[in-house]
Length: 114
Length: 116
Image (tube, rainbow over all chains, first blue to last red; front, side):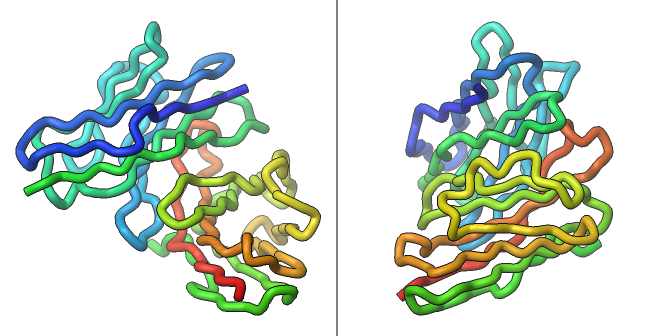
């Protein structure tokens, strides 16, 4: 069965500092990995995805994530955090199986302090 | 272009009443998903449609919940005999048929359901 873990419920970082939001996964087969962000009282927005190829993927708003197959991780990173990055972040995984669904992690709340 | 839309945006209902929540996916998107999210919490998967069929409806919490999709487009999630624990935000998402398993989901703004 597929599963996603986000080991930190909450991440606090000072504005201007680098941020990391962690995600690890478990799947049978090759994973397709996604990050979404949810701002207060809004729906989820797609940030970036890893399908194949370069392990470092870049996405919206200056975010990037690195796929690490040996560690089964897909951590979200940004070199310099903004207060406006404060939101709820979700990692998700699926495989190349038509009938299988996305599996979402529990979410990590990021607070960027001014 | 237009995104995923959901209606109503807010619904307050009395315990025991039935409610219908509607989702209009992005035009051409064959995959459609329903999730439930309690206040500030994670996503609870409910059901997934590919076209009009539902390969995965394992997340429906009870037989009071049902969903249908007609014409490969609009979907309706129905909750019968609502209970207070059904109060949540119901999110709908759709994704493109191109490389269907590789594409991201696009989410609607959600329907906030309050059962009094």
